[in-house]
Image 1: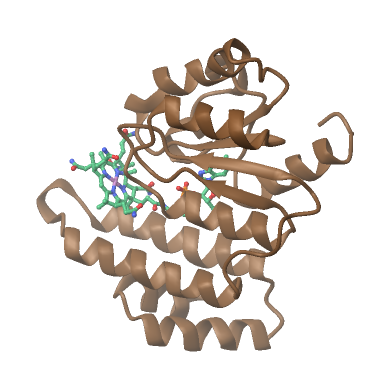
Image 2: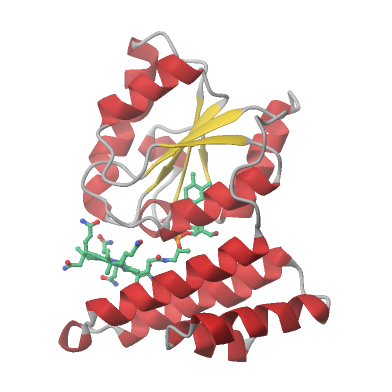
Length: 209
Ligand code: B12
């Protein structure tokens, strides 16, 4: 796993794939690779990127390698319309981080959900419009900057105001995880993408989470 983390951290896409294949061959699960490999690499990247040593190109190369590995782990892009239901995802206006959201998207597609990706820096109204059009089972908000919290708090009320109060709101991402579902006015606050997927499995199965 360390070799994968190191390859990701130097932005070496080819080596990242080689180590991913090796780990899968050794019986490591996809979930293990995402949580112990990709997420751990991002924690180390954060430690590396101090105020005096912030290299945007380096971070973008790491991001590209991460997406290479995710595309390998979850091949085929979008799956046919999901039997389990539709989920709308967004990083709201003011937040341009989207690696976590993209990972969540692939995990959900891999589990048989249909995902409508509203992208990053997404105005709240755009998300609401998508909900009105698609009537999803849930919306997923990814938040990496704390300045996004006031907007996240408005999602549930806005949905209700547009007659979609039944749509579940789940949130995740480093900045939101420091809060609580109650404080964010959401139905569920996920630790990881897999945790979010399990929550959806519970609600789509009609079980109270
Ligand atoms: C990569 C990165 C960037 C990249 C983003 C590239 C991209 N395409 O996403 C770039 C260089 C563009 C960037 C820019 C900035 N960044 Co930045 N960035 C990071 C960094 C190093 C990693 C984030 C990341 O991708 N993590 C990896 C992913 C996989 O983790 P994750 O998002 O948490 O997702 C996992 C789970 O949480 C979950 N998940 C995520 N979302 C959701 C949603 C749901 C519904 C569910 C169920 C699950 C789920 O799924 C994932 C897998 O399990 C973090 C530090 C850190 N360790 O978080 C800083 C960090 C987030 N950035 C920060 C800042 C300040 C900025 C900038 C403002 C910097 C600047 N001064 O210009 C800008 C612009 C911010 C803006 N307006 O949005 C701060 C935020 C501080 C704060 N609390 O507000 C951090 C924490 C760095 C720091 N220590 O200061 N950044």
